[in-house]
Length: 428
Image 1 (tube, rainbow, N blue to C red):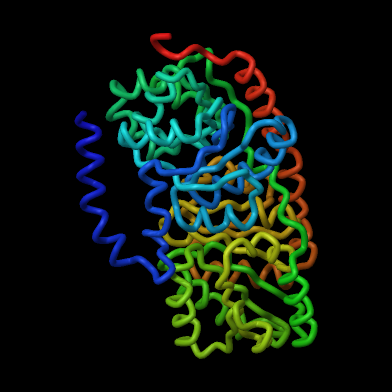
Image 2 (cartoon, rainbow, N blue to C red):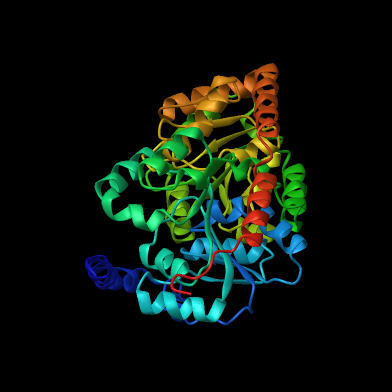
């Protein structure tokens, strides 16, 4: 009761902010009915997967494909929380249905369950929604947290309400990324018999096949004589400025700046315009991805990737990749997409959301860290000047990724077991 009241207050407080930030295409208001449980049914026996945003959705992309092959008679649906996550999912993920996750009010959650009628619910990482989990338990629908992760920050917050979490978590199953994640979720109240370490699904990623845009971009690079591409991917507020500072420093010291291009890819589409204004304010020649067919590319300039779902394929053209969210204090982003292509990875000091992966990469020389714009320029320069270093770091990244694969197979085995051991509904 108290939880629902707090949730309602938060929704009321947040609504004006969302309306003010809404876009003409209804970024926050489009499909609002789905958030209140008004979704189309998918048929009995549905497997319902929930992924908060882009990173979580891409992590389960391969799993969704294999579930559809494994259970062809069942619908496999995907819910998301963010507009960006939905946009990318609709472009890349072959789920039977994609929709917004319901607000965690009892009547809303019930309406969603009535419509979807899931046989199994899979939640990527560790998003804990008490009313949703309670409703699943009452209906006898097993819930499994896959690719489970409990960051240090989340762990500290959850411990404050551990007393109330125990009954919520006790009935769920958990496939955690690391032993530390498993220990934390056990401390919060999970049943030890239902917790296992299964690895990280993100290591199993396979970037999409070469897109038409990639072929276009490769042709434009060749036409402009650009042979050295740097990518700054998933940049966040407070980072584009330092990244551009580093790039301009590099242009002054590089042996052949006329062969270089920076691909700048902001994480969120609502910041595309702001990022473009920052580039223009530096006096750099630049092009938007949305205009590349007519505008072409500029040597020693910038390509602003004002699109969604294309960054993963662009990484393969890079000589090195800086991962955003890490220079400013945003917790970092996934470093595995460039690693797949054997591209040297650089990140800043703030990788809290990917701490285990970041430390693994640093430990085997598969990534480099830069704490400032000055250091980023220096690392870029080292990688450009030293072919052997670039090859070694990129090769180590690819090798580490390959060595950690297998989480999808382990998840499928656990899912098969749950599907054959479905519990009875409470009170039945």
